[in-house]
Length: 202
Image (tube, rainbow, N blue to C red; front, side, top):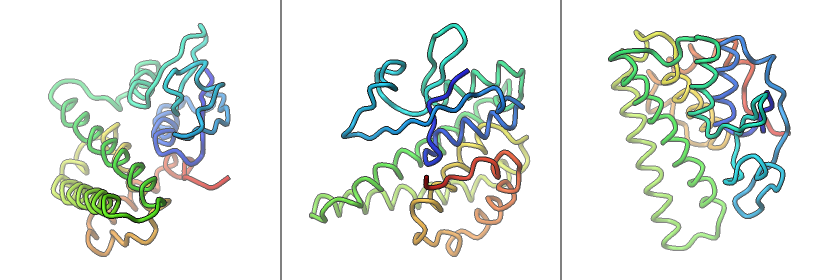
């Protein structure tokens, strides 16, 4: 399998954490790909019309995207337990959606942050900051459940969002306001899958 991949993408990281947790990381051939909103990558778009990362190419030549689909495919391939069954599934998927939603906001925030500051941009930045702060409050409230549940897609998605904040927003100082979330993140960051997928500039 080939994975259109970047060491800076938090959504790629989520896929790679799942792959490591499932023992599939060595089966993924990582194809370094660069994408940008203003500069579509023609090679990636051959496999994914949206031109987004991650995109997974299967042995039969078909492609899977986005990260949520790829993670669930890998879990099924390995007969894993990152996507639980029954009532626990909905809790895990809600956490997954929370982590992905945080990343959506953070990526838009980062893109807008680097634009010339105008009134509308300032209002957007304030809105992004409020959504992320509310997300932290939600994560903190749900820490007992996150700790109790087996490590799965929900913890992976939220962990990747927190890691992306550290990577792209180092001045946010979120651990001071949310030390319990910080302690939980430090715990899960010790997992080999999280260590092996830390975002980095290249």
